[in-house]
Amino acid sequence: MTSLAGKRIVLGVSGGIAAYKAVEICRRLMDEGAHVIPVLTKGATRFVGRTTFDALASERVQMSLFDEDDPIPHTTLGQTADCVLVAPATARVIGAYAAGISSDLLTATLIATRAPVVVCPAMHTEMWEHPAVADNIATLVERGVHIVGPESGRLAGGDEGAGRLSSLADIVAAVSQALVVGDQRSDMAGLSVVVTAGGTREPIDPVRYIGNHSSGKQGYAFAEEAAGRGASVTVVTTVDRPGPLGATVVPGFTVVRVDTAEEMAAATAAAAKEADVVIMAAAVADFRPVDPAGVKLKKRDGVPAIELEPTPDILASLGASKPEGQILIGFAAETCDVADNAAAKLNGKGADYIVANDVTAENAGFAHDTNEVLVLASDGRVHSVGLRSKRQVAQAVLDLVVADRDGRANVR
Ligand code: CTP
Image 1: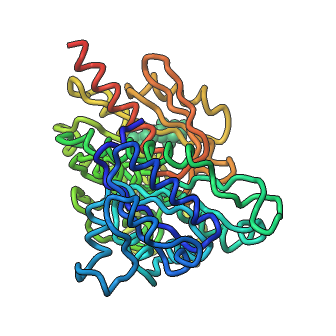
Image 2 (image 1 turned 180 degrees about the vertical axis):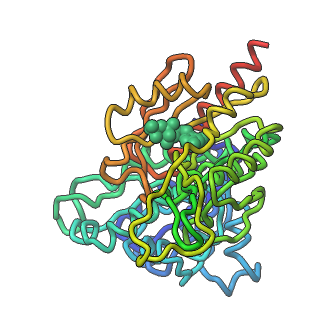
């Protein structure tokens, strides 16, 4: 756990009966030495007075996007926070945050920040279980927001059920935990990382190709996680960055576009020469047409007999020529005998790690935003990473890589 001493925490309080508990959260954060800036919604002040927070917190309460001394309070708050905590978080605030709607200072701050965010929902059971709220929570989890609770128990009006704000101890611990993740962000600074992403396309003729279902999401998640932790990243890819930002250039990224296994092999080999870490997340076609047609094949000419030949095995050749100290990570997308097949690839291709998954498992593998993997290391360790977002899978694997590099440095 990270110490909270000196950390700037924006404490967002929204309008639910549990708002009174935010007073005690504020106190506990202050007791831990945090610098607490309360941001209340209008609704929150129906349940608890701003004077209480003014008296307890490090700074006075802020509520408005427009009436503060600072002309852009939300960006100042968002940029300077080490963590934004929302406790309690109502269905409205959760919905606005998930939808990217900045209707007040709190939601604007949530959207303006890059700091870790901890959201502690509290509402009646019917609201918590509504599909809209469930979907919004899933969206936030997917984006790496830390969700704490709610718990089951007695609710306002004497009802019992899920929806009660988590214990104050759990909330303070979650803030501390979220800061650990934030603190690690520079642990790949100075490293050069090469990631391959997407499925290769092997032309049959100018119109058709042999391809596969790879979306590139897991590869880009590795690239973004490594860049977020300070690495300079080259992505050798057949696809644009998935998601709403598409091909938008992200700081710390060099994107090299390729189509075929042959092109990916050449670009990856060139980039990997100087790399500290190489991550072969691409789904490389194993076979390609020997002689792609120069013009579109016509139906009237009958079913073509397409002769295939193997493509270069990029991972195996990187493994055979690996520079000293480089960490090479391969993948194994399997439909059965995952651990055995992955172990065979680990040994056969000279990788330091194989990240293996069962592509037939629910919510894992191609095109999903989530994944569930086994990580096999060349020294025999096996780590299981349960179902989580592809970004969190990348985070777990890169944690191993960083620890591995630190271990090697200590041995030297
Ligand atoms: N790979 C590669 N070049 C290829 C085929 C695969 O670099 N021509 C890499 C993939 O990027 C992945 C790993 O090798 O990191 C395993 O890929 P996979 O397709 O699962 O394994 P194959 O060796 O192709 O074996 P098989 O298809 O028989 O399971």
